[in-house]
Length: 624
Figure 1 (tube, rainbow, N blue to C red):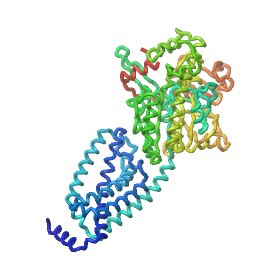
Figure 2: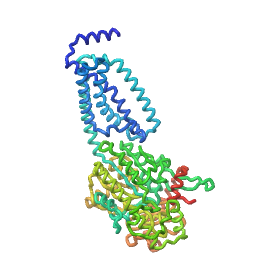
Figure 3: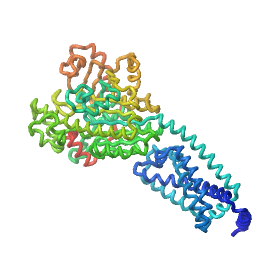
Figure 4: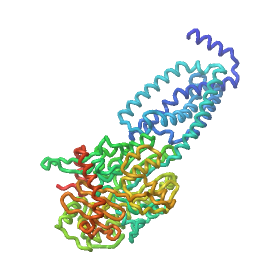
């Protein structure tokens, strides 16, 4: 023992061992140990979120900061109180000090965890690799060993400290906890003021097959019930007839001729069977990336081979579940993900559901929900859907009206099953309390055709059955419930709307506009804008310009088309020759878009893996 240690022990021995003195020394010891070890315990908790590529676990989401502060004070007081009591059963001062410090250590770790996760850089919303998390854990374990050695070396001396020293440490902990509690109340108010955003997208969903859009069949009772709590946009237009292009516009807020993502899967060399697909370029700023920069947690569950993570669609998502499975699996995983985040930090989630996509194979009782038919489509499964679809498109198969009605009934039966699953998900959100606190956006990427223009499934030409999609937006606490907007809007408006609603930056740079303008103006009886909006939909070289009442379509190798949507919503009478005045109004915008695409240059592509190739071929996106 050194001379300093001897003098310190002698002084401690001369001091009366009163209960109050022991209490103060115990409190001081507990305060110091928790201040040192609290950050270690908080960061070790990050392991539970390592698979989501988050550097630090959002431990503060499990408990509020004021609650953590109060718990830390109470736990430290308990530890200090039991220190003198343990003297009767634990003779070792070091062991007694360790046991007394444990309650305060746990309590204060919650406070440090909250502060660490809220203000540590990189932020909780920044993705980090599993390797990075592994290195972090090793460093933390090393720190824990070092701190443990230090405490073992000095614990006895700390336990015998003076009353004044102990009182100082206790006062410091109380002041710090008071600051934490006040800070936490402000932070929680800020967090609650920024709601969550949940986007549910049903692949190939037509607006006119939902009850809320006037469909006669009872395909969507749960979606219709949801729509009564929301704002319904009656004229929502997709930016493409294909998933890859449409979703790229949703996530970037840009028209296709700006982001350049068109090709789902093309054979680069038919002999080698190499398949190339466009990627969502790293130079593009996605909705998820902009929200991450504004401290919003992001996650996605995506079931579509056109949107693989290696194709760039995972940009901006801390968690990107690529090909998780059918709708029940996606909803179950989402439900197991969101409870810890309730009310602590705003999150943005994107759920892409593929179950409605052809071939339409509803299970009993949904397969006969809208009538019993022949067995004509029993053998049209995932393996030969493409063959049947292409046979119809090329005129080799001529389905009768009854067969088309049967195909449509199967689509509606599958839609009714999707609706049932959606209703269950909304009920769970209500039970969790997230339903009222969230903006929920329900939409589709494009529709499907049933021989309205001589083809089934979807094609390049942006007819209404392919680009008119549902868009239903429920605001927190069902604000604006029951409002319907007849003015045409676009899926390119989704990203700027979310950014504007969450008060994040970047929405002004996008091609779309915020839907909040339409909603606010409609709720107050004002027109949405002083001009008529024109919206572009495109796929490769086929492009349409749509106004509220007209649609102009240009093809690379076919005559142009013009339709009066007000009098001819089914687009059966081509008025291109009869109305040159309307063509003159819409054609310049089409030409500008085509020129812009020409200036865009080649889009970066990636080779598609074999599993995705087979999925895309079965869904009809690839020809052998």
